[in-house]
Amino acid sequence: MMAKTEAKDTQSQGTAVGPAYLSVAQRLRSFIVDERLKIGDSLPTERQLAERFVVSRHSLREALRVLQEQGILAPQQGSGNYIASTDIDLLEDHLRRETPSDATHQNQDIFEFRAMMEPEIAALAAERISDRELRGLTDIVTQQGGERNPRTLRLLDDAFHLGIARAAGNHVVSSVIRSINSVVGQVRGEVYQGPTRHRVSLAGHQEILEALAARDSGAARRAMQSHIARIRGFVMDDD
Image (cartoon, rainbow, N blue to C red; front, side):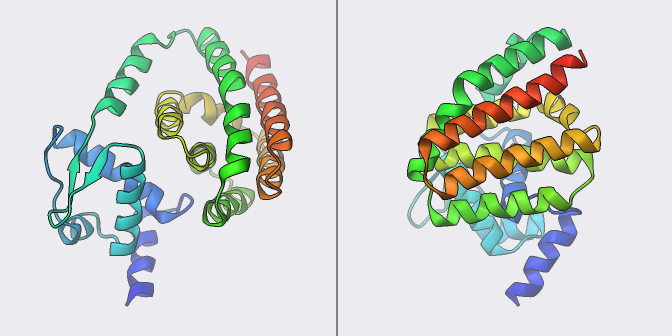
C-alpha cells in the first residue's frame, strides 16, 4: 500500500524534485500563508493534510519535520502541530523589499552574500552531516545529472543548497538560506540556460558532495567557494 501511495505522490507533483517531502513542505508553507494561520493556530490532522495534498503519510511527516526544524511548526503531544513562528515569512517579505530591482546590482548583492556565507556553511555541514542527509544530497545530484528542464533544475539547486544548510545543524542558517532561495530564484534560473552552464553547476555540486562525504570541512569550503565563483562568472559576464 505504501509503495502505491508513494507512486501517487510523484504523479500528483509532476516531475519529482529531489525527495518528495521537500515539495510537500513547500506546499505546507503555502497552505499556512494562504489560510492566514497565526502563531498558536493548529494545523489540520495528518490524515486531513494527507488527503488534501494527495500524498502519503510518510512524505507528510517528513515535510512536517522540515517545518519543525525551521521553527515554523511545533509539535504538541496529543494535538498535532501548531504554528510556532511567522518570522520566516516576514524575513522573505523584508528581503524582497530590500533586494535591488536592478538585475545587475541584485546579482552582485546575491553573489556577494553567497560568497560570504555558503563556504562556511558547507564547512560546518561537513563536520555535522548525517548519513541520511548525505543520501538525500546524493539523490538530488543524481537527479540533476539526468534533468534538462530549467525550472526543475532550479528547484533541485535550491534543494541542494538548502540541504547543506540543514546539514550544518543551525536553524537560523537553514531559515535564511531557504528565504534567500525564495527571493532569488530567477538568478538561479539563469544558471541553467544552456548545457555548458548545466555541466558547470553539476560539476560544482559533485565536488561539494565529495567533500561532504569525506567529512572534510576544508575541502567543502574550497569546493563551495569555487562553485560560487564559477557560477558568478557565468551570470555576471552576461549582465
